[in-house]
Length: 455
Image (tube, rainbow, N blue to C red):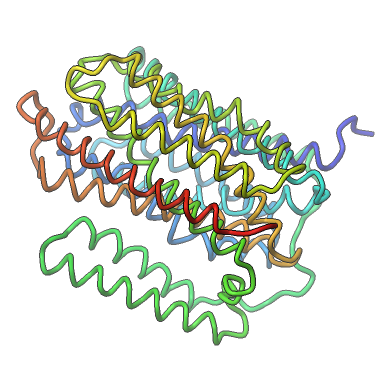
């Protein structure tokens, strides 16, 4: 008989997946300058590296969440891990930037399978009075992955080259797949099998693609047309889901629960503020400040390190107190961090940047777990897969919108030029504008978080 309970084994498996996936995703950001130099990639192409990953995650998050409820959450989780390993291997052997962009898109789909159902597995096997603690542990693993990623990415790039940031993920994933096969027995899915909404999935994928590509082409007429098309396709998706007998997501859930809808909205704004900043600060530290990849990674890890330390504590607090109070406090602290970060210029010290990132990490750690617990606690048991996907969708759409807006800024200030010292003033302008955008998002998130009401 195993000395670990089913809940503990599931928690180990999901936490490992949630550690490896962000570790591999974020480590690439630090390797981007070396990758760009080796493959002669332009600033525009480099900007698509994180964007395509997020685009794919957004496009496939809801379809995989629904599929997991039908065919099995563990099955989709395992398939996502395997696909992630394949995509990482193909990125590692690529000889042209276009092939890396293609496989990053595939890796994003794998990420949707992993993140879209991992929390649903934990929710399925964990008592409701311990959900916050379990989700806090999961969040801590994500942040540990993000904490290690810049440092690992920097060291690997400096010692072995940029391809190593893709190779190192593969043995970790293989070991996890073996553990799941041997130890995590059982499957979790809905008792009744509902028909899969292929039309709804297609409409949602069109929305995601036209939004991202349209934002990248603004302010051209083509960009404006694509953004308008994305808004129209989102409206069509909502109408279709409202009238479908087997929707990907019941849009009525947003009307039924103020906590659910405002928690997702707050999540969207918080992640829109944060994702692109780490990408830009990696470029700022290496191109403008002249730090090595390893040095830049050590500075950037401070945010995720603070998140990893605080998230489990915040999870326990959310089991005892209203998640709204703790999450809102976290939003306020993140706001303070971005106010500080908005002061940086070409001569800002590494210690000031590190302190600002640590403050943002402290606030994010307090925000994320209580907010996730509020989302998962606001739905019925049969919809936890869709709720898990919606939760991760709000995060990834936030990441996507934030990164797309940064791509727009980079296209405006830098265009298709490669990164050279002559481009440093343009890069600094991009960083400054992006930081102001992030601060604006977080201020609105503070208001929405406070308005969500009691659990």
